[in-house]
Image 1 (cartoon, chains in turn brown, red):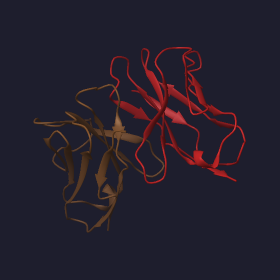
Image 2: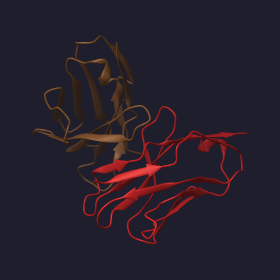
Image 3: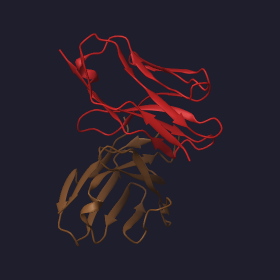
Image 4: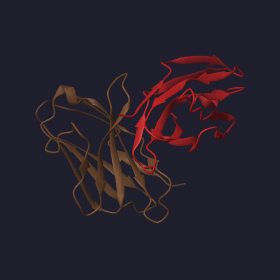
Length: 116
Length: 113
């Protein structure tokens, strides 16, 4: 079946540095991908909608300058957490919709970010 | 705004026990309702869904009925297996928007042999 892969699955970074998380659709093209995050004991919250070749659409309250999203190809979207702080420590997960048969959403396995 | 409230976990059951994970929602109009499952080390997978009131979604022995009168979509399985151990997420999407999902917090289920 369709697979979405995230990398890295776990990352630890120092406060003030930037970290990039990749989301790849391995066997289909995806014009649209989504980024979610989940804080401990909280719900998965949609951060932004990533559109290939155009700017991402951010949900209310999500800082676009802090969470940079790039969707440069039909199989790859990246989320860069800039100037990371401990409060950015969270579980980040992406999902992708196949461009051809766009009625199913496929999720990545998620990435754990710890900022120390 | 939309919200989903699901049963706090973790839930620990013995094999062949009956499972219920409660889920209630708040939304305007007629949302679609979903249960997703995440097995260890894997991405979320759609388990079942229902798109209108009184619909019953079912898959792999799991069932959930869309109850508009109680705004609920409880997940049930009559006899769980060890392989059902996973995190279960209840979710909704607004009417007309199947891609923007609002999730519950997730419930960790552990089934012991």
